[in-house]
Image (cartoon, rainbow, N blue to C red; front, side, top):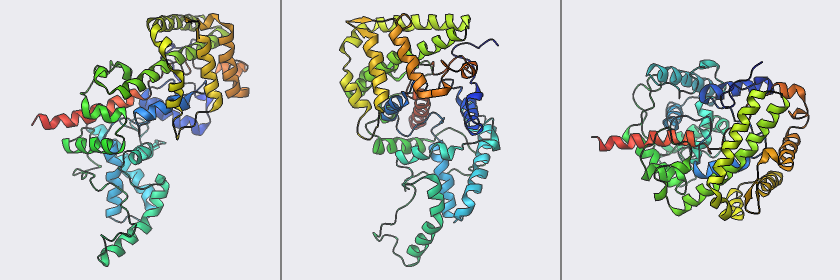
Length: 412
C-alpha cells in the first residue's frame, strides 16, 4: 500500500489496544496530531519545558472558555445539592448538551467531541481538571473522581455551618472553586460559545498572574497582542525581543533542544522508510534531513555557546524527574552531532544511526520496528516526525482567546 505524505499520513490504529484506540480517535479527530507517540523516549524533557512555559495546558485542550465551562457545571451541582452518586451521569449529560450548543452556535474545529458526540471517551471536564487546579480555579486538591465523591460530605458540612451561623469561622472549611469565578451566563449549558466576555478574560488573566506568574503564558496574556497561526513556535513570537531575559533564555534552551532532537526523529523515520523499501518516503525524509541540516548551519554560533549544563538544570528542575537513560541518549546524540565545531550528518554516521536504532529497540523491545516485520508493516509512515513545539499551538489559541476577550473593554 502506498504511504501518505511524510508529515500528513494517518495514524495506524493497529499499534494500540482497543481502549487506546478510542482515546487516539478523539485525539486525532480534534487536533490532527500525527506525532503524539514518544518513539525515542524524550517526552519527559519535552513536557518539562511545556509545563514551564504553559502550565495547566495539555495537547487535548482547545479553547480558553472550557476553563470556565467546567467550574460552572460543578458549581451548579453544588448549589443545587446534586448527590455525589448522580454527578457522573449528570455531568455526562450536560457535557453532551455543551457539545451540541457549541456546534449550534457555529463553533467548529475546536469543539471537544464534535465528531464523537455521546460516544466521546474523554470529556472536557477530565481534560481540563489538572489545568483548573494549576490555575487556582479549582481549589479541591484531589482527583476529579475524589471531588465528585466528596460532595455529599461537603454539602452536609456547608449546611451545618450555615445553620449555626459560623460560615466565617476558621475551621478549615474550604470552597472547592475560586470565589471570584464569574457567574455562568443565562442558558448555559444549552447555550454556549467560545467568545470570552471582558470580565471572563480579566478573570482568567488574573488567575494566571496569581498562580503561574513566572510562565510564558502569564506574560503573553499581560503584555502581548493576539497573533496568527503562521507563528509556528514560541521563539518566533513577533514580540520576543521585549520578553524578560529569563523567558528569552528558557526559549533558547527549548529551541536548541527542539531543533537538534528533531534530527533524531527524522533519522528514525528515514531508516524505517529504507527498511520498508519505500523509496518515495525515504526520498522525502532525505530531503527533510537536508533542510534540517541546513537550518542547523544557519545557527552555527548558537551551538557553540549552548550551555548544556544549564539546559539540564532547567529541564530537570526540582519536581521534574528526567530518566537517566533519556538524558544519556540526548547527550550522546548531541555529542555526536557537534564534534570539534562541526555539525555531523546523522544519515551518514553509523554511530548515530546505531544510537537511534538501539534506543528504539530498548524502549519497544519485541515491538521494535527495526526487528519486527509485523510492527514495521503497521508503521504509518510518520512516527514522532514533527518538530517539538511544547504545546505552543494549543497555548497560542488559548492566549488569543483571552487577549481577544480583554480587547472588548477597549472597544466600548
